[in-house]
Length: 390
Image (cartoon, rainbow, N blue to C red; front, side):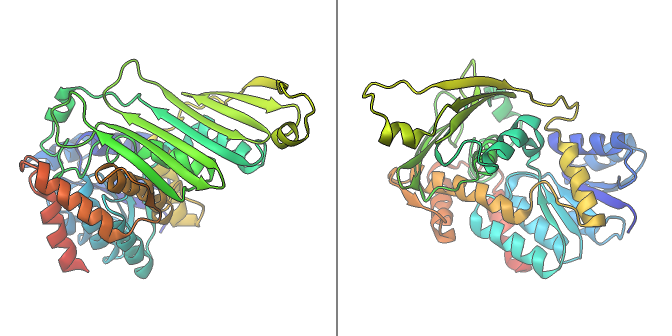
C-alpha cells in the first residue's frame, strides 16, 4: 500500500469536517475515496462536493466495495462498536471518533476484534496534538514536577444552547447518545486529564446533574478521584456555564504547572516540598517559588483533527505511532464509565477498572427511567448488530 484510501462513515457535522480536511490536505499518504451516510441523498451530495468520490448509504456495502483501506467512523456513539468490528472483520483499519464507545465492554471488544484481524484501531483524540498539552505532558514525564499528588481540571468551556440539543434527534438522549457531556464533549477533557498527568485513579466518586437544559442526560459533573497514598484529583465538566474556562492544574513535589487554554505557567519550588514539610525549622515558612510563563510553540494545525488522520495513515504505511490507539482510549472510557456508575448511583466511590456489567446496568436503568424514545433506539439497534457480529 502506497496511499491509504479513507472511507468516511457518517458525513454530518464532524464527518463533513473530516472530508474537507482530508481533501484539502493533499497529502501523498492518504486520500478520500468514499463516503457513507444513511440519510437519503446526504452521501451523494457530499461525494459530489469532493470530486465525485464513491457514495454509499450502507457502511458494510462500502466496506465490501474494495475502494477503501481504512474507515473513519463519525456516527452516533452506539454505532462505533458494531461499525468498527464489521470493518475489522473485513480487514479494514479503523479510525474512530471519540468516544471509543459508550461502555467499556464494547470498547474492549473493539480492541479485541481489531487485534484478532490484525488491523489498526485509532481514536480521534486530536487535543493530544495541542502544543501546550504535549509540552505539559513532556515536563511531567521528565520529572520536572517531581512526584504528582494533585490533578485538577475545570472544563466549563463546553457551553451548548438548547438549540444544539434540538438540532439532532439523538442528541441529549440515553437511547441515542448514551449520555451527556461525559459522552459527547468532555471525552477530550477526560483523555487529557489522564494522558497528560500519566495517572489513572484507583476510584472515583461523582455527581451527575442537569441544570436548565431540557434533555434526558447530564450536563454538569463533579468528580473526585483517589489515586491512593493521599494523592487526589478533581474534575468539573459542564455545558451550562458562561463565561466558561479550561483550567488544568497538576501539582507535584518540585512545582506546579497551570494550563489555562493554551497558556502555561510553571511554579518551580526553590527546594523540594518534602524538605520544606519535614526539615524546615521555620513553622510559618513561605516556600520560595519562581513562576515562569512557558513558551508554547506556534502551530497553525494546533489540535486539529487532520493531525490524527495523518498520523494514523503513516502508522498504517510505516508503523510509526498513531496519536491514540483504541487500547489507550479505554482509559478515557474507564473514567467516563466510573463517573456514570457513581454519579447515577448513590454517589459512592467506584473502583477502577469498571466492571462491564456495572456500566451496562447503569445505562440500561437510565434509559428505562428517562428515555422517551427521541434518540431513535440506537442502543437497541446497535446491540442487535453486535450480537450478529460477535
